[in-house]
Length: 365
Ligand SMILES: *Cc1c(COP(=O)(O)O)cnc(C)c1O
Image 1 (cartoon, rainbow, N blue to C red):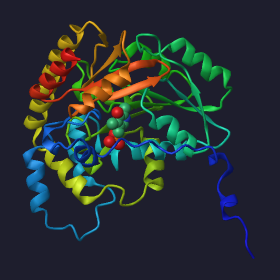
Image 2 (cartoon, rainbow, N blue to C red; image 1 turned 180 degrees about the horizontal axis):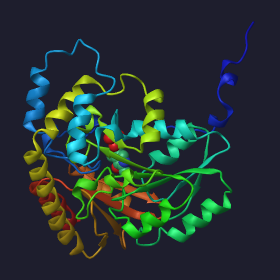
Image 3 (cartoon, rainbow, N blue to C red; image 1 turned 90 degrees about the horizontal axis):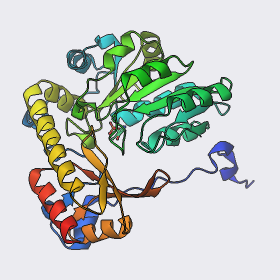
Image 4 (tube, rainbow, N blue to C red; image 1 turned 90 degrees about the vertical axis):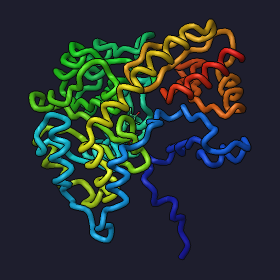
């Protein structure tokens, strides 16, 4: 008997839209007829310096790729405890921070529930909430990309217990803005789990709130090796969680969620803190230089950033045309045309010679 197998799908996922991936690097290099190393890739906030040489060496000499990973990642968690300043019992490594976003949504959300999202921000929060079947309540950031705390409080209240997760990002992507302590403290008083995404915190001039988890039972802090540690391709992140949530995540997580290569490279990166510190310092220094040079361009309005990228609003010309003109010269930046990000581009902080290339092109255009 024939039947429509498609009708077996979860109904709340019928409206799901496919993720639009950015063009793979190699494809673009081919299309532009430029060798890969001639392309200035400043569109995905990757770290141009890459991983510590110690991480590359550890990957090349590791002898146990045929053995399954340690499901508890004890060695990595001990090193992370030192790095993040919280006990290892509060740390859960993951297949990128993205995996934990998915875990948290599936652990907490049913189709009757909602999250509060504060756009413009990282797209994965609402994506994962939708995958879990839940609703996203949007509370828009102010014109200078701050969180309107009173509006978030009101949205949570009005939803009458339906909001379970509040996603906050500091520094925020794509604005680079910081969430002040006072605002975070007020939001932690709400009856929700606050997920603070610190993917870019190493680049900030202000300290991480990782240790706050020890004093706030409704706070989770997410971190990643993708940005500061330069191993985005290996997929390694971690959550810093209150004890009660760790218990649940241990039950919930895939046993082998962190692969051996990611764990080996992550551990070696943490054992070479001098490299990490030097790389971050170079990128912060370059952020200052990039920001100053961008601020001098009459048609760009750069937003001060605490991360490894600078968001610019484009005035008097079309941001998409600008992005495409840069692309023709082998320079990749991210373009936005959506609410709160009208006619904007975001430029990742690269090496000094990459800054010079993008600035020279922007001056000519
Ligand atoms: C890049 C990014 C992440 C993703 O981190 P992965 O560890 O690579 O999954 C998370 N949050 C924000 C805000 C990001 O920009």
